[in-house]
Length: 74
Image (cartoon, rainbow, N blue to C red):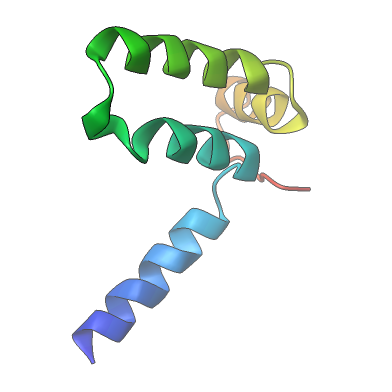
């Protein structure tokens, strides 16, 4: 039962995160053991650039400046 509760909690946490950023970072992480550090850094930079300027990125910045919790995936 504890595993089910942990999975449900993790699912809720992931659902509250910006979907595009999570998707991009999972692409970087999955298979990361087979890549060099140099390639991982290149992939990470690309993931950041893909999400820069997105609605979720803007929401995160505004929430920070307004000292409130961000609401992503709108």
